[in-house]
Every structure is written in C-alpha cells, then in structure tokens.
Image 1 (spheres, helix red, strand yellow):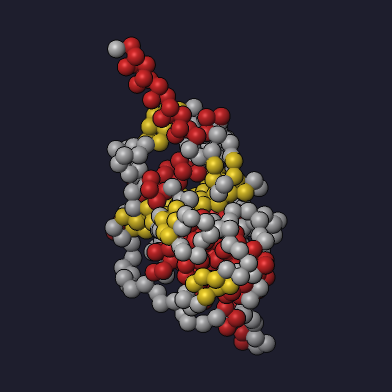
Image 2 (tube, one colour):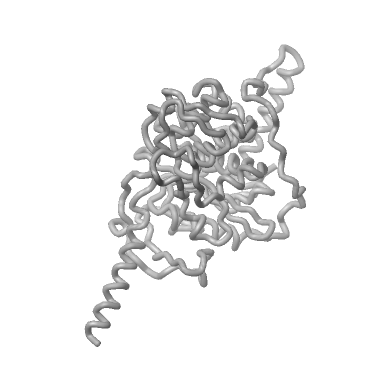
Length: 370
C-alpha cells in the first residue's frame, strides 16, 4: 500500500512539474521557467475556464506589478488586448497602444499581404536571402521549389523565417519592397502605430507594433477564408520538406488547449519576450487576444479569452454577411501607393488625418470606437 501511495504521489508531482515547465520553450528558444517566477494556487480546467476537456493548467501568481483596478491582475503580459472581430469592440486592454517588438507575430501581416497578392498555386523558388536567414527555420535549401500556398502554411505552422523571406521576395520582388507594402497595408487597416522592416520579425529597433494594431491586423485576416484555414491548421505533411519526416505541427498550443480556438501565431525573441496572438470563436462571436512580452503566454491568453467571452454579449454582434471576402487577383507591385494630390486631395487627406486623430483619442482614453 505504501508503494502504491508513493507511486501515486510521484505521478502527481511529475505531472505538476511538467505543466510548470510547459512554457519553458517557445519558437525553439529557452525562456524563464514558470516554476522560478510563480507559486501554484488552483488548477484551471474545462469546468472553470475555456480549456478543453482533458486539459488542465496550474493557476499561477503574477510576479509583475499591476496597476490598481486592472480587471485581470493575473495576466503577466506588459501589453495585452481582447477584441471582438466583427464589431471591433475592445473588451479589455492593458498598454494596448504602447509600442512593442512583435517577434514572429509579424508573420500575420506577411500572411495577409501574400493572400491578398493571390496566386497561391504559383511556384516559389528559394533564393540566397531566404536560404541564409537566421532564426527559426523550415530548413529550406537554395533553389527549393514549392507552391506559395503551401509555403504560407509551413511559415505559420513552424514559424519559418526562411519561408517568410521567400514569400516576401516572391510577392514583393525584394524584402524591402514587401516590408514597405506591409506598412502601407497596415496603415490602411488602421494599424497606425506599426512599422515593419522585415517579413519575419527578427529584431530591429525600427520594427515595432502595438497590441491594438496586431488585433486590428488579425481581425482583417479573419475576413479572408484562406487565412482562417491556415492559422487554424494543427499539422500538415509537405513533400518538399527535407528529411524523412514530412509533417509539420503547429507551435500554437492554444489550438489544442482552448475551446473554439482557431488561430493565430506565436512569437519569441529575447528583446520581444513571449508574444502570442490567439483567437477563438463561439457561435457568432470571434475574439482575438494579444499578449506581448508575456511571462506566461498560454495562461495569459486563456485568461484574456475567458474574460472576453464572459464580458461580451453575443447579441451585440453586428449582422454581417456570411460570405468571406474574395482575395483580389493583383500583384503587390500593383497596389496603389499612398499619395496626396496637389489640390483637393490634400484637403481630403488633411480632414482624414484629423478624423483619424479624433478616433484614436476616443478609443485610447475612453474605449469608444467612433
């Protein structure tokens, strides 16, 4: 009997320790262990959260100071937001307009721009810039060839920087041109505090965004059917992968962990910390949650989505068309540049700028979207 209880205690200890270590790695990079920064309190399960049956998480204390009155003091992220997609309503935010490094969540914008480019059956040839890029990788080799659509899937599943570079050069001609188009498109979507210098998110002091802008960008993505299909993939085989194992599995654990989860992208660098844009849908309610510089990104994301579903009335969802948006059939080089004409165009642009400033002010300080 003593042996039985000893074995049971050992199993419980091992399971608890494994959960505490589960977030020790992200995007192939070591990060601070949960066991070193927090103390367990109670478990999160499908009975008291949105976690799927069969899963559980140890509820953990937040070692960072949080402003008084914060509705989610357990969330460790420096910057965070929960937004409902169809209405654009912000349900919760913390430092959502603070400029942050996005790491590989950058690839959400890369994916959207490539989908809007179209030509998913076009064959991409891997060039020397993609072959030589650092960081997380699909281990593509020079002159490898694969369909653009499949390369986008691989890029999101395993966060390949080489894949993102190959996509950028195929769709934009050069990485710089593609990054310029990312910025133009981001501003068009309302992500006005964002600047991209590359398609993958490797550190650059001029490569930044905000939690709010990432939520806005992801919300745009969910209007594209192919986007939803790609970011919700859990695994897929690709014959063009090198080696015997042809299967890629998603790094986004929320897809298995959370009820209704359907996206979108993880990220990590030393300067950015742990980053995650997650999403879940229940009925007509589609939520997007963003955490930047998080200590416990899975815990934070569960807390944000739980809070979002608890505090958003499904009746508030606007009646929108069920038809997903058709991806335009045009090259990135054909996307119209932002220009101001010599006469009436200047006046219109001036008033648009004033109106945008007013909207941003009310949204930032009062949580009101005009």
